[in-house]
Length: 205
Image (cartoon, rainbow, N blue to C red; front, top):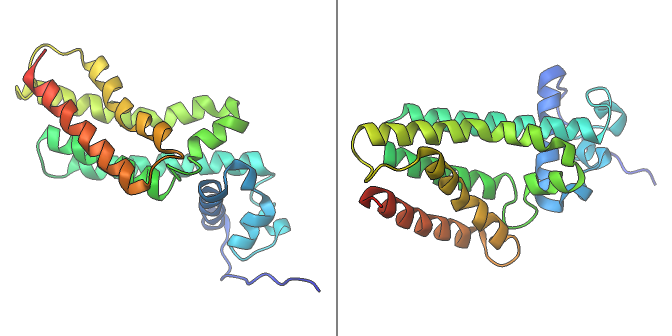
């Protein structure tokens, strides 16, 4: 017997492409890159594979759309925090914890971390993935510069080194927590590491 697909209200153009990218992101986070198929994506949004093909020629184009979706979501979160209230160190903490929450809730950190899953099958996407991290790196560098101008940091720290250390806070936990801790554990560990990092950079060398 033929299985019928439960259809959603019709969407066209950019809206349908976004639906497909969202479904692709959720599939990779839940099942890993091998779980991403056009059939599963189509089923998730209530359409048929042939209809999905009208928007994406295949899996690789969906992967690109997923990466673009991730980059846009991260940028929006950064913009909101950086434009909001708080001193630069408070904003740095907010950026870190919001980023970790996004990694856990949307990118499957602790299970099938989307970025690592994509790299495992599509190493040619590395440049695109690194491009998505640039807004985060630039925002962190700007907040650290502001903290230095305000005299909030101790000593003459190399800002580039501080940015790398900041990025390492969550990257290390992602790798360690893929199979050995829960999402809540990851967030607790990141916050604990941040507290040590903040103490060290404000005390000086």
